[in-house]
Amino acid sequence: MNSDKNRVAPKVWLITGCSTGFGRALAEAVLKKGDSLLATARQPEQLRALIEHYPETAKAVRLDVTLPQHIQAAVDTAIATFGRIDVLVNNAGHGLIAALEEVSDVDIHQFFETNFFGALRLMRTVLPVMRQQGSGHIVNMSSTAGLVGFGGSSLYCGAKFALEGTSEALAKEVESFGVKVTLIEPGAFRTDFNGRSLAAAELSIDAYATVSGASLQWFKQMDGKQPGNPRSAAQAIIQAVESPHPPMRLALGTDAISLIQEKLSGVKTDLDAWQQVTVSTDYPDKEQ
Image 1: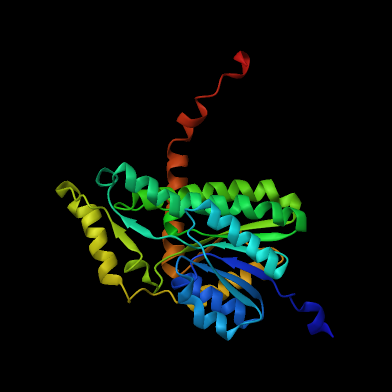
Image 2: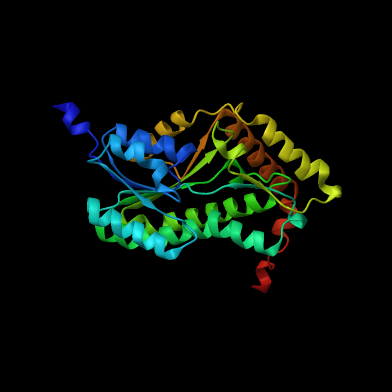
């Protein structure tokens, strides 16, 4: 009897980028546990085997997150098929290794369309559904690079920092509606991020060879050797979603927590060292 009371009701998930990596591992995990899933990918035929294995609880649709009409169609399909959306996971995206000078305006806009504005549009499309339901959970796949800046990844960090700030503020905006927001901040995981999903700028400036050039080489050398297990990450994400008190941020991987702790320590060091200058910028009490 107690086990029935503690059992979590099945949820309906909408996950972007389900063909590989975190998206595929999470899609498989939520279906295996008995939840329902609208799985999306730019090439949904890559999801055929997954859908055929779970014909009653899974449906696949084509979704390019840079196309607003695809986003609306995906949300409409989820509602028509399952009646609700309990969890939105913004997972679609790719990496970009390049110094800021090495990236063209066109590449910058295209990169942010995929890695930030796509997630933004999905959130804005799903939020009215969740508000009407009085419940929901938005899970945004960020990165350690959403809190820590890495040389040679200024655009990637910029997109993830933007997602972090938007998500943190959004959590406060929607809390009273029963909607929760969680940022996932992985370190290096054994996905195709270091391979197929990693882009580099066409322009290479020699002056940045030891920055973006070295960074690109490191990512290539680490491909297939990353310490993080995507299946374990999927279970951690599910655990966070099912928690009555989910975290605002969930770091994944020993490398992630080490890098984030180092960043927080550096922030505190600067605050403490410059505190006198910081407080000196207020008007004196008598002049207020």
